[in-house]
Image (tube, rainbow, N blue to C red; front, side, top):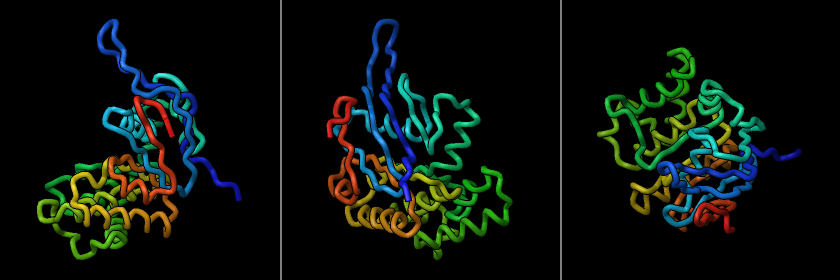
Length: 227
């Protein structure tokens, strides 16, 4: 069985214009392939282009030049609705700041992510309960974010990222607000989901411990892949 590339980048560059005559080239000549079922860490110093690279993978922005394929489809040829569909159906996002809705319970936060993709209330409720059980939060369904620890909030964010059964989970410094022990618990959860469910995981991190948990590390410096 051939393992498919779920993300592929060919000669990708990203340039930000800073006024009429000033440009900043954030990504330069990026070539990479992410295979289905891989755990990949993107590492490098601040300002190396890690988050920009992840944003392009997540269809949150388009490159200035080059080709990006998500599950075999070129994102440069997609309109906004098509990009939104890819984000909603193929990709799950986990952020450093959790980005939960504070007035919603854990269950409602996950349920909302399912409902906005057109599922019925009953179907969304069943899947949200299932996902929160999967991340070990069956006893916190009706708690709001303010009643949860940082690690528990990030577990809700993981469950929300899985809401629509994506192929790829993208994490941006997902343990950055957690203490070391709690961060390790979240990474172990991510690795377990990869092993049991086959999710492809791509994580931007400064943490060398997290990098060592990945099957492959992509190192960036000044917008280029150096290793």
